[in-house]
Image 1: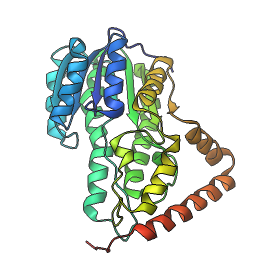
Image 2: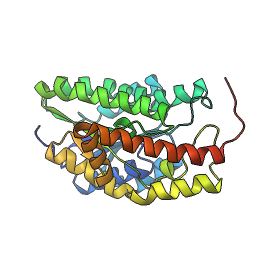
Image 3: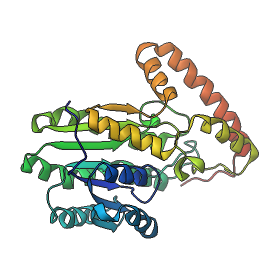
Image 4: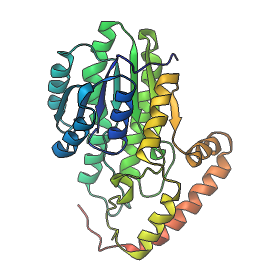
Length: 285
């Protein structure tokens, strides 16, 4: 797959209000890209816009799970010219044991983390094909989109789905010279991972806080994650990792499945033990 330069290209970035999205906007601007930015948080989006103002052709705040809002954003963005790069970064996190999760928690995660990117792709990729200038798509999945991480079923449902969408588009769009990069970060030092919501769990409990601190030891900064993603686009790389632990896990999963299964079972026992100590009263919906 041929790499894509950011210089002189127009890049759409979702989730630009903070974390990897803000870092990506800053790095893309430094490389000469024009930017169309969105985030659900109006104030945080405005902060990002102020940092890269000279490069912004359009910005607006909305929820990417709302298809009509995405379509309107695309219409207003394309008035300024064709889009060359689409970076699906916006997302939420959700998890918990199956007995603690509500249907709303499942739906919210799938609507934002899977259907949201699909809305963005549906709005921007057909015009990219019609224009005929090639381009690039980035979808941010997760280590939870590769592995069976404990108590992350709603998040994994969405991220595995986005992984599948990317795998199909990787080949479907090759004939149009549109590349696809799938970013699979592990822990990243953002609010999404520092205080992850878990149904039925008191996240302030010492047992959970200790577990979280241990899992965060391998966390990378949003800037590091964004840099890996940007390099992936420039080099035409499909699968991009942000840390060695995720790369090693992917290797085990593919080539040493018994070792992968043993590691997942150990991790599950450890997390289950911590959650049992931090559990709150169950609820059923």
